[in-house]
Length: 252
Image 1 (tube, rainbow, N blue to C red):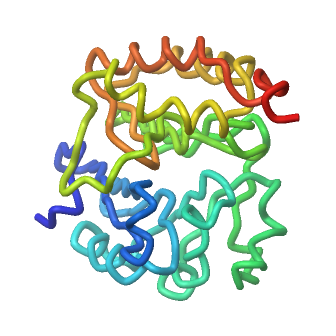
Image 2: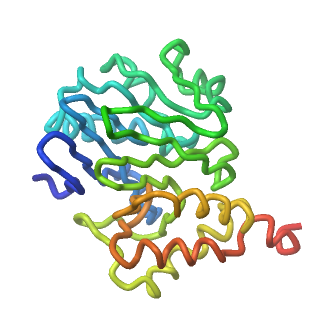
């Protein structure tokens, strides 16, 4: 298997894959970017496919797990270019529906995407896609950091894709990495979360929703995977985090 990918879950009919492709022209920025793929009975759900610069590498890697023609949904957690700017390329190579917050539909034309009929617009409180007894749930994560932002929970694998929540400023890893020392890893998360997350009130709202789920792993868009005891450790930390508008006096 390519060093840029890792299977996080596979039971024979359901698979959750993590990729770690970065724009090599900007690798000195030290913000690793993760992309994810869920495959359920041969149908693919691609999560935050990223920028145009990684499209060729990512599409080749994805094709090793599912036929590109069988990608049914592409989920964009928010509007940032490291999440969404390859939307035109994916729209050409697939017939997938694009799932995103209703706030960002009108902005996709600025990425050159004009097929708005292919967008599934999420209401603020989220939505659910059923796969028999299993499901994908789109959880509100507004203002963490985008005003129209969602996390994605996969009930079969018990993996929560958290987007920028849990992001860490680290060099791009050579292979799959999970958090080993949470106290040490906090230092890589603190600066990003303090500035990019909306406020402690919003952090608490998100954690309250997430605690209702049965979670084995938390998979952020940047940085390392939280699993085992590091899942509750992260949730406890994030629930108490002061960030964003809690520090207005430092910004104005």
